[in-house]
Length: 293
Length: 85
Image (cartoon, rainbow over all chains, first blue to last red; front, side, top):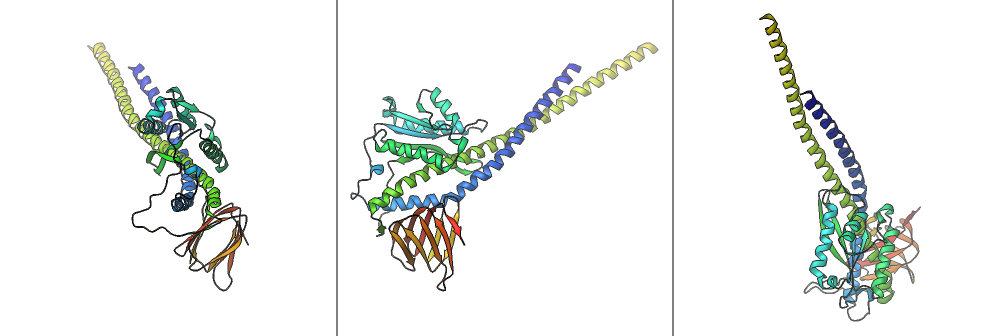
């Protein structure tokens, strides 16, 4: 009996210390999430406007300009930029991103994949580990981007992708990441990066006749790389916030589960304690009765 | 006209103004009320918000960016903006 008591006590102690860790991780993630969220909310209008401007120009210049970055070629080689986190313990976050990546390959690029023409650039260690183990053609050059998350570093990745696209190394580039909705919800999606998707001009909507200064070609040459940089930066920031959101939720659940576990452990501890006391009493009483008898 | 100045970090300005002076890559220019739709690239220089006709202004130094004018609304996207006194 005493042995069982001790076991339960040890178990309670270990669950308590796990709970302390999960609680602390939740707090840390909450703080980091707030910062990451701020960064996104602040940059969203900028990114949206840039995107709008680009779409306006590209759709109004159809057939007039030879836009290298918007060129639709038969797709032979595909690049996926997959953004995951560096650390685990974030619930199903990384699994879901990897799943989305595999799904995209299966749905859209199965033929290219069969020929081994699908390359994955990983941002974040977790996705790299999973995908390279699963036999995908991965490139870990930008794996550690999250160690130093700055606009400049993200820019380097975007530039490399643009260069590879222009040189014809890849015919399509997609970003697979998790879009941040709120702390508990993420949307896992693939987004076309290159060639630049043309904005659908709504039926009946008249095209605005913009004055372009300098002329369109030069303007686009200036605008294009900036927009793509921002697009990737936004994806990375979104992924960053999603990671902390997912971790926060996961750790919250873990703490809750620990609470429940503690409750039932305490009940069995008390039960064992009571049983021990009862046995002891019975022994004493019956011992005394034997002496008197 | 309405003016909105955006940077990747935050919204720098939003409100009704008389006009705005911008450093285009081909030279300084000014946008006033009811300007025609325009998209232009900006170079390094000073951006001057003309708040009213009386000459109340607000200045920023910028590293580059873009401006779009549509429906009497000017949206300026800038990088490396610093407010000047």
